Amino acid sequence: MKLNSTVVLTLTLLALMLGAGSVSAFLGFDIGSKALKGVTAPDSRPTTKFASAKTGNSQHGGLVLLKEEEILKTVKARIEGKNKTPKSEQEEEETVTNKQNPQDKPQPEVEEKPQPGFPVSAESEGVSLSVQSARYSGGALQLRVKMQNKSKDSVRFLYSFLDVSDDKGRTLSASTDGLPSELPNNSPTYTGTVSIPTALLDDVKSISLSLTDYPAQQLKLEVLDIPVGR
Image (cartoon, rainbow, N blue to C red; front, side):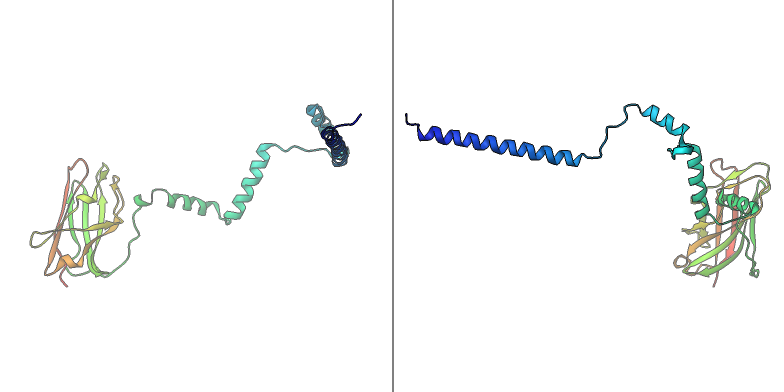
């Protein structure tokens, strides 16, 4: 009985496929076995393992668990040791005090020779404002100003309401630096500056300052006829 050539070819291909599959399975099993050598199954009871490690850590070198508080203390101590230079307690207290409310501390006074016609002062309700000197520097007129509150109540100021005018009645723009936003009761003397652009002072011989408290507006400080001639 003669076999069809197509049937023979099909049977041959099936035999080759089975043989190749068997060889691949054997090789895969062998490679996987070699790769997993030395790998053991995990302990199904980790609680028991840690308990035995705690009891026998001195003899078998078990794992020692540190407390979280001790770790945080150690890290904090190292960070402070790197970023902080040794200081005495008094120096640390002074540093903290200087950092708190820097605007509320009076500025250190700079000794200078008194100018003719100065100081020019005004006082209202126990609050005084005086102009100590007027000097031209860096394209602006610098007025050195002192403020003090001898009353029993604190006083607040908003320096955007500071009115500056020249001897011709014209309003001038000005900026302040170092003056406190609030004068506490029985305060020390605070020093700051009022700056006026030089370009606004052509042919100006004197200026005036006017300042009121905010928001009550119960007092008004007017310093008149401040000489600014060059």
